[in-house]
Image (cartoon, rainbow, N blue to C red; front, top):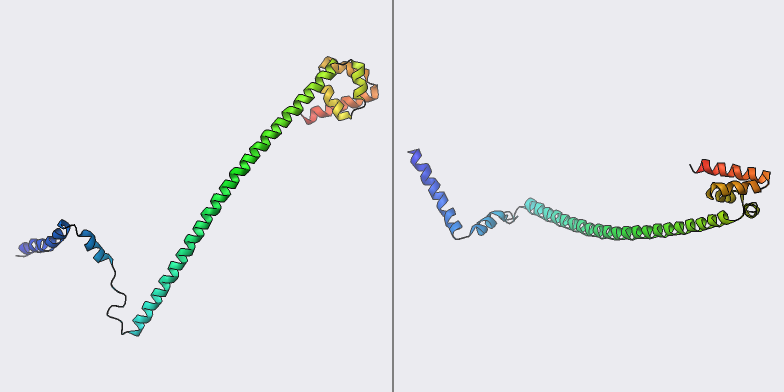
Length: 179
């Protein structure tokens, strides 16, 4: 007998549900289930329940305010992050421009030095020696290192021995510093 009652109960419970689904009233059914009953429904005359309900409302308001302040801070942080990313992009662009400018300046200096070396290569050794002895020793050594070896040897031979020794020492020191 119990075997006959279970299917009948299942049909009795399922029929209203199927009727609601057929009428597309499922959202109404779910919203009725999802909506909580009024907090003080039936408890308005109990002071403890009223106090508890008020405290819960106060807490809910504080939580809402706190969440709003978190959202505000989050928006501020996103704005600051955007500003920082833009500034970083600007700084990287400036760094690239400065690097390009520095590379251009370096190339210009190299070109000037190469031209100066070509001039000393074309000079007579005695004339080049007279000029180099009046230059600072490290600068003169740099020129001597860069000219063609034959020209450099003739220039050093034309310099007085004391100055030639100093220039040779400077040339050696330069080679040690810049391997």
